[in-house]
Image (cartoon, rainbow, N blue to C red; front, side, top):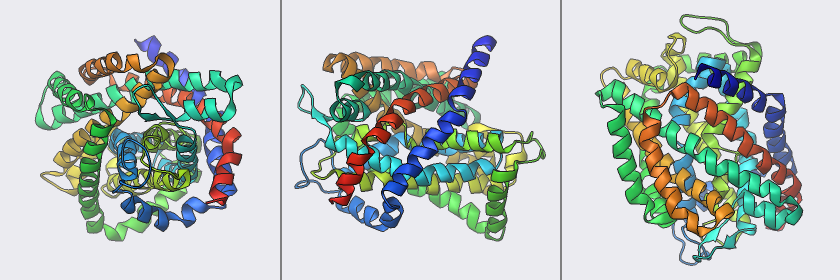
Length: 443
């Protein structure tokens, strides 16, 4: 096991090395410049479109409303990345890692916009009559047969990666949090979550979208409110915390307390990697959900889609990071969900740890639902609609297994597979960027 961990660690370091960082940030910046910073300029318009997209009777053909598509995408992103991922980024890369999470998110808004625009434009109707789309489809229909191997690669990595980032990681983090807070055995948590997920999955994307549209807004507001209460109590220290984040992004972080110290490259690497893990911009997953939206206009859905990155990282992840830094717990030596729980318990004595545990459980549960849809769509692209039922069964069985596995190993596997997913998608975005620019100008 130790040898496997070392091998995966080496692969992760390579996959998330300078080439990947340049590709991720470079693609996002190229798209942002090509769009003349439209994602930032039209942020208020995007929020307006989101609320108007709650009702979809006359918006176009699709499976779920534009709002439900965004909530499904957010259900898959708002999860352990916002709680455990942020804490891990700070533990490994110092407070400066948060700055690079911000940069990843800001340029990632352009990436997410482009992904959704292409997903809606190049989506198809499968054998069951459902609208399906995502990187594999816009690679096939936008780039042609000679690039089909690239679409196949994305679908293959996506179908497998889903069991890491979207399943076992989520189950393990919830089991760990509930065991440490409520003394619930990990296997019990895994079994209960598997049962809940199964009852939702049998209803397909429409039921997933309905559950996401109900739970994601409520749980996000509740979590932000609790984090906001801690931040307001320490408002005088917020400027110093923000200064620490920006300063350490370019200078590294000296060892302090239980914190071992981190260099600038560590801040960039873990900030970008955990940022992508959290908001999934460039990963190619969110457009799979947005392809199912009831809409006639790819650009409108793209504007709604880019809000996912803003809400997930700029708002939710920042709130978690500020709580960890303001309470001083980032030097405690804790990491992952335990660090976030420690920070909230310091900020809200007596019940703060319960906020994290319950929030993590609900966040992760909806992530399990969103990612199950991503994984089965990737599997369907390769093997056809007949694979959906067995894929769902495997998905449910993997949840209790993940709840008792080693967390460090799971994070390494997830990092590697995320990187392998991102590469085909980013290549496609660069090659199809003229299509995105043309559609945007014509809207």
